[in-house]
Amino acid sequence: MTAPTTRTCAEFGAALRAAIEQSGLSLNEISQRLRDRGTPVSVSALSYWQNGENRPERASSLAAVAALEVMLGQRPRTLTSLLGPRRPRGRMTGRRPDQAVTYDQIWRRPENVARALSKIDAVPADLDTPHRLSQFVSCRVNAQGFEESMRVRRLVRADHDATTRFMFVMRCSALPTAPVVTFTEGCQVARFRADVPSSTSVFEFALDRPLAAGELAAVEFALRFPPGQTSRHTQIAIHRPAREMVLHVAFDPAMLPRTCFGYFQPRRVLPRENRPGATFDERTTTYQFITLDAAPGQYGVEWSY
Image (cartoon, rainbow, N blue to C red):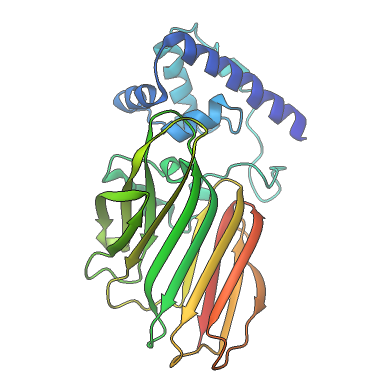
């Protein structure tokens, strides 16, 4: 079942890439023009399409392809005719686990993510560009049993030339004040916005220098949560396959959890897959959840007292 889909993606991607190269427009310019026409497509989504990693299927994406044909000087249906029939949706879709997954298939409240990102003129697909090849997240839990701070380290690879930024979204259980970035390496905070009703925050980080397509970079940042947190779990979303995913949780020795385990949820409509729990004592105060060749989905650690 995967061969026709793979061939369709490749044929459409090759035609789109040729049309883009012939037009002389950059992906950034095309993305902005599509947004101006009311058919927004992120730079990362355009990169997926032209590289054959994914194909447009939603009604809004198909409208964007029709707009692309006009913008790139192509005859009507030159690109849309290569898309073929839509793939079946639902639990049994035949989708390979190593393919990219859209944010709305992973996030529990995707509308909150989209609303927060729109405040910095971004769309959810921008969350995974540049491509996160490796991600290490270390959380510190305070003596009340709640998240106090977080440190994130990423190895990224640029999808296109002139890559200058990346996004980070976090949801707090309460947002009385803004989270505070306390450290950066290889990047710096450019903008911060919050969707207060949903306690969702979005940071735009500017890279220390622009990256060329395929170029690698290591970035790191740390932040402190606002007071009033009440959730006893932490999680990260991966939209494209990653070489490694590490979730590290350090507990205050004065408040060690009774139970703690990692979990993976490949799609928000699917059940969680729990990992073995940990036993804590005066010498064991941390929990690590490590996955190599991580497939797209939500990875998390949950604890209780």
